[in-house]
Amino acid sequence: MENQLRKRWLAVRQEMTLNAPVDVPSTGRKTILQKLIARYRTFVIIEALNLIYIPLLLLKLLPEHDIWQWILMALYEVIMLVSLITDLWLHSWLGKINVEQMSVYEVIKRCALARKRHLQFLFVMLPFSVITIALTAYVFSDDIYIVIGIITGTLIGMCVGIKFLRQFLRDYKALMHI
Image (tube, rainbow, N blue to C red; front, side, top):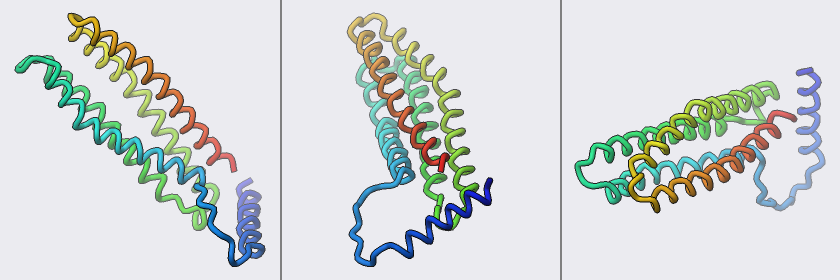
């Protein structure tokens, strides 16, 4: 199976080099791998900004010297820091893929491991995030508008998160089914 894929891979590479005109303009299109890496880079930037933004928001909303202020800040910082490190690792791991020098098996193996780590991260962090959001709603239970905002934000975040997860999984599937 691998020998057959390798032969097809080399045949396609040879066909591209033999039949490609010299003056082909660059279309500027990105490969699926480049799109996946760019998506991880975007998430790294968002998480880095949230590392700064969330504590400032909690400092503004909660009274000074409130123990919940520090507990919630610590929980959100842990979530964002673990997310940042995980996405940075996935970005770096996928960025090291070289389709011209690696075998098909190596590329698929690397993509499969990245996909597995992504899903493991979600499996571990989702319950932790749900508990943190529930604790936040409990702390702000006196202010109904903040609780409504937390619920609305959670629902919108879930919809957006599912959309991006589907995009990630679609890209991984395309990368692993050559």
